[in-house]
Image 1 (tube, rainbow, N blue to C red):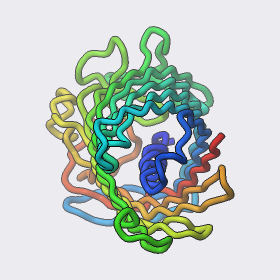
Image 2 (cartoon, rainbow, N blue to C red):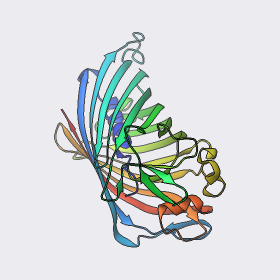
Image 3 (cartoon, rainbow, N blue to C red):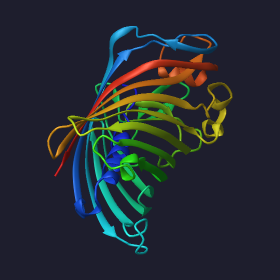
Length: 325
């Protein structure tokens, strides 16, 4: 497995747009959701070399991933004035619990929406992982053996804390009509994640994703979509970029591995309304990764290899089902 997918972030963003298009009076103070994510990865072997290239699909199957997350949000109205831009301001307190085959992760966050099109949020989470059948929920890297080894998750839990700003706009807010909803969203998230007790530059594996290190990181994304009053309720495309603010987070590995490498991705997204309480998101993700001058045999070797370019590839097909209680 490569890593647990980040489908939930896209789902939350799209749900935010949908809520923005609705009247405030239709929003219950307490909202609970169950989100189940599934991803299928075809095989796409890396190509050695330099510069930018595209790696084709080389096999029908590489991996599958899944997770389930229970979310609970409570909205508190905090009007800042009588003007329509300020009258609907609110605070949302959120709690969630994420479960995967190799981890469990409780989360908390608080969001403030001073304007209908602007939201700021902050939160934190703690994760506990386990290892079985060769799957690494949480492991540390043994540099001498060039392999990942099991650790006690209770002595070394995963943790993160983050802040996020989000701008969103729906043309339906100014042009009435069911077919006039062009939605746009831009987000920027800064966060710090690591394993408790680990030193700077010490690689680890979390949720089957290897070669991670503690440090300050970012995620930026933009979405353009069209919303429709039919079963296919939304179709759009999302661009995202993520990486470490400082390559030095990787310590001695940074010189060759390029610790500040930026991962870009482009994802067509489709949303299907399945009644009043259920919706299904379908995502087709194209992503980029480091290109190495030598042939990569296993993920652990990448830390010792020279990065010299970027490689685009078809990453995954993902499904995310949301049930609203």
